[in-house]
Image (cartoon, rainbow, N blue to C red; front, side, top):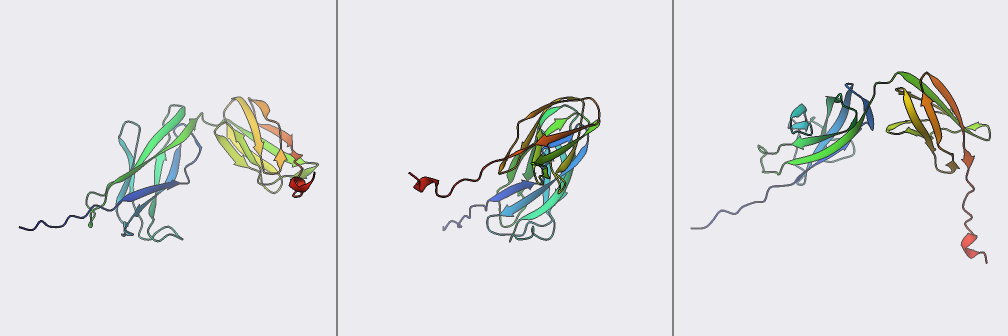
Length: 206
């Protein structure tokens, strides 16, 4: 008697993107989840779930009919969630169950985290400039909260009362961290320093 040949299940993988770095406690947010078959099989219409740290299913959605633009077989969907009421780092798991796929596939899961922060009470307006000229696309960070300056060198961040350290980053510039105490709407101006460009001939100069 000849045994029937067996075929190993195809692998599946998950990708997560548009995960916000911080969400206020209890607020709604959304993440994008994509699933891909190692064999390029169509996964449209299949369910993906998001679980909490205890393994309870918080939300689910079905993968769309078309792959993510620019990919051959990354089928994706958006899943809405609610941030837990407890402040701190919240960890979730996205899960794709491949049990009913034909040909057979292995299931996949992927953890992701967001920082749960206090509900915002005030607005901080940050202006970044160097030698009197506004700096656009400078990254603003206060702990897990972040923003980016616009063409006028300004950015707004909504945040709760408390003590923060404001950090600025953009390639080619340097700025000292600024300690802040937020107890009302606040504006702060940060003067950055342009860093000198590297001398391409430095290695050849004795």
